[in-house]
Image (tube, rainbow, N blue to C red):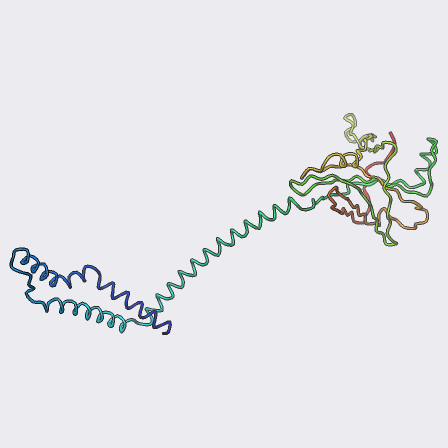
Length: 303
């Protein structure tokens, strides 16, 4: 049986039973039921059980069946395809709407589950450390040899020292981590330099210059004032104190380039500085400073 025939038959039966409801069915059988009740009453009064016209029952039942069948045939004949397809389309539209609602609920639940799993993976993943190289101080062998000869120290005259002011931030929530090691790579047009880590044997400070305007000479440019700023060594802090989420910690790290005399390259301004940070959980993070001039923010000196 075709789909259309099924729809047409179902629609015809629905209309037939809608017409032959309980009230109309009771009205059809009411005469026959009345005859049966009269016969029962006569029997109870002692006149014997006798139905006045037994054919009424047969006629009533037959009429009901014929009426029911006739109503079905009439509804089946008059059921127009346009009406059937209209109702079918309405039903399909309702099903599509229900499906769309269920699909959206499923997608929402799926997205919520994904976010929960992502948050759980984030807790168990390797921390992400963001950073920046704030400023740098460079001491080549010419300036260093004079400083240390005055103080009576012996120094290799072919080395250059790099002191970087670095800021680190732990970008992973609920995942404290300490820093295990640093390394620096400088990529220049002439080649790659790999300075070595050096732990300062004396505390350093930065000699910064600032201008202060004089109140007695308002048109003057101001007086140059020198201030010394103590260097905070980053390694001593981050090795013993975990990096908290979202809190930047700044400090200095120091490197040395050996045999700088043999290198004919301007590594300061032409080099790309790549600072690699190794954390205590095995993660490796890279902080990159593009090539370009360094700001003149002061000079490095011993207090």
